[in-house]
Amino acid sequence: MRVEILDDEIPVAAVMAEIRSGPDGAICTFEGIVRNHTRERETLFLDYEAYRDMALTQMEGLVAEAIARFAIRDAALLHRLGRLQVGETSVLVVVASAHRAQAFEACRWLIDTLKKQVPIWKKETFADGAVWAAGEPFPESVALDNEQRQHGLPG
Image (tube, rainbow, N blue to C red; front, top):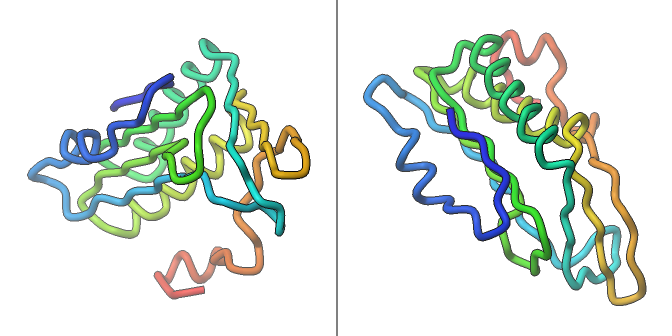
């Protein structure tokens, strides 16, 4: 398990190489990247803040829960704080598992749950102003329903 809150660049390649192991048949990765727009507004940069100790404790709990809940071998969850420019990585989730279904489910659950529960806040600065943003859940219109998940069917 690797859980970190960083003030500098997230070492994506190093984390992926570190988590890979012989028993794994799947490595699933989510890399959150600062995009150049939000809802048709030009994004200049993002600022992330956190209640660091609480956020780190909650992130550790999420990874432990994901390992137990989805029967994955290991996971890494890293989030960056401070000012991030367009194109920079803000969050990284890496899940290692014997099978792809568990890796995908755990990876998606980790990022969705982190955004909903962990005390990390994002201020978006646009060309025309700034706002503190709430985490957005996965859009229901493209989410798999429970029956599709159980049968491994596409949405």
